[in-house]
Length: 124
Image (tube, helix red, strand yellow):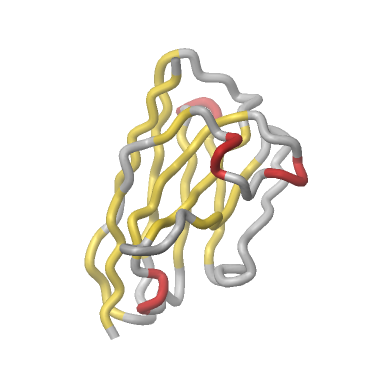
C-alpha cells in the first residue's frame, strides 16, 4: 500500500501563486507516475498534470504554461507549482500514484493510490 498526503492549498487572489506538495509513504516506488487531479463541486475529477519516473510531464491545456509539476524521489515528494491562478482553478486538488501508460495518464481510474485532497480557492 502507498499512502499519499497532500498539502499546500489555501485561499488566494487571482494572479497569486501556490505550491502544492504530496508526500508518499509505505510501499513507494520511484517508478510510479505521479499525477495531480482536481475536482470542483458538481464537476467530475479532471486531470491537471503528471510526471513519470522518466520525467515526462504532460499537462492539461487549461494549466499549460502556468503550472509546473516536479518530483523529488529521495524525499518521495511531488510538487505542483501553480502560478497566475484564476478563479476557475478553484477546486480540491488530489495527488495520485500509479503506473498508467504514457498515453493514459489523464484517466483517474488508472491510479490506485490517492491522497486526501487539499483545497485551492482563488478569489477574483
